[in-house]
Length: 234
Image (cartoon, rainbow, N blue to C red; front, side, top):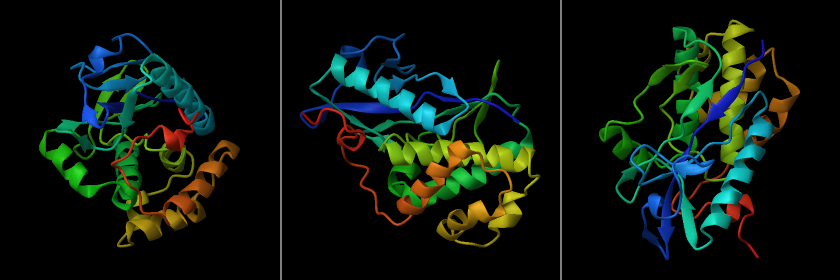
C-alpha cells in the first residue's frame, strides 16, 4: 500500500527572546506562512511517501523562513508564550477508526517520551490537541493531536516514520497496537515496535535508528530550533 504524508506544523516566533507576531514578517500564502490567526508561523512543505524526503522538504521551508526574517528565533512544542502550537499530519488514506486509534496509541506514546508534558497539558486545556482529533479532507484526513514536533530533524523524521509504520502496520500487517502496547511503558513499547512489524520500507529504517537515539535523550523544548536544523550557524 502506498500513501502520502503531508503536514502544516506551526512555529512561534521570537525576536531577541520575546514573542513577536508572525504576520509582521510572513505572508499567509507562503510555504513559510501563517496559521489561521496569523500570530503563529506555519510550514507547508507539501507531501511525500517518504519520511526522509518530507523531512528534507521541511528543512528547505525553514531555511526560507530564516532567510526571510534572519533576526527571528523559531520555537516548537505544544504551548509557548501563551500560544498553543500544533503539528498536524496529513494522510492520503481514509480515517478508519482502527487507523486513527493506532496513530493515537503510537504517536501519543512518542509524546509521552519526548514532549514537555506541562506544555502539552496547557495546549489540551486550551481546546487543542485532544486525543484522536481528526478532520476529513479531500485527500484523506488530517490528524490534529500532535504538538509541533519541529524541534529537530530527528524529532521530525521519527514522527513521520512512526506515522507511516503505524498506518502500514494496521493496513498491511493487520496489527492491533492497543494489544501490542498493553501495559508497557511508552518507551519500552516504542523501542520494541519494530519487532512487531512485518512491513518496514527502506525509507523508514533511518527513522527507526533515530528513534532509538531519541528515546535515550532528555529534550529541551525551550530553545530556538534553528541550530538543531543546521540553519543560521554562520
